[in-house]
Amino acid sequence: MEMNKKDFFPPRPTASPLATDIKELIAQSRQQVAVAVNSAISMLYWQIGRRINEEVDGKDRSEMYGKEIVATLCRQLSDEYGAAFSEKNLRRMMQFAKAFPDFEIVSALWRQLSWSHIKLLIPIDEPLKRDFYIEMCKLEKWSVRTFQERINSMLYERTAISKKPELTIQNELELLKNERQLSPDLVFRDPYFLDFLGLKDAYSEKDLETAILIELQKFIVELGSDFAFMARQKRISIDNEDYYLDLLFYHRRLKCLVAIELKLGKFEAAHKGQMELYLRWLEKFESVEGENPPIGLILCATKNEEHVELLKLENSNIKVAEYLTKLPDLKLIEQKLHQAIEIARNKTNLDE
Image (cartoon, rainbow, N blue to C red; front, side, top):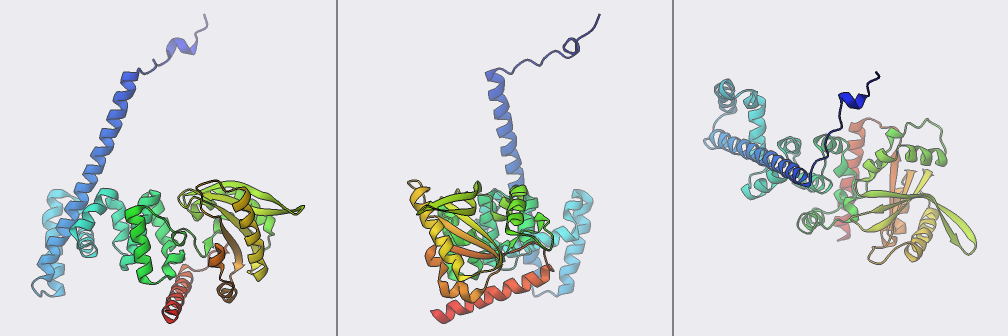
């Protein structure tokens, strides 16, 4: 007699509505416990760091004394409580307390980010840069791995906001923090890293577009989590002529369409007119009530800064950014980005 698998493995009974509700309660409770434990750990580490700092800094002690204090504490604590209280971790707790001296600020932080997230923030010296990563991490709900990747890719330096005066950065971060109001300067980047496309030395605009669509998920990660893909080669008909927009996205939090044009060479003045035409058409025929005006992003191999400045593209809601299909040395990129930030801020000070 042939036996059916169902005779050995009878179907699992369907969960009743009562069981489903209880499972949800259990899951919620576990999440609440995890959040509470994380907050308690972060609070403990901050208090330990503050207490050690008080001992080391408060009595004009020598640097050697500080090292001895940490080494002695490590021996006394790690024997009883384990590796969490190694010298390295104790110093990190001290840095944590110094980086976030205000109890109210730090208490809000550890309710929203895990200790693993906080550890990545501690080495960041610039307060505005640190605040940027905190708010963007909360907004986009980055995992620890994604958070590390964003910092490694110098996301802050690549956003337009980093090139603004410090007061402007502070105001926009406050709007994001208190009112969840996101500005385009916090969204768009320059340059964009497209090394994941795997393009050879010679490629066409169609190759670039096709590679982006093949790696669409990675491209959206580089753009930002709130971008949603809508169309490729969007047909735009004007006066019996057809034009084709390379890529069309929608940004949920900015509540607007985002038109993207891909250019192999350098930015040219004619690109502005082309993009303005696309944006006005999208605003008239594609935007719906309640949306903000469309934004254009021109991705090109070379930006041509003077052209961009003279054309006043911000008045037309157009952004221009370079893209890199192969990453040069990260130190070189960092140097160039910091130079660009310095030049932009100095220019702003001269204009005021």
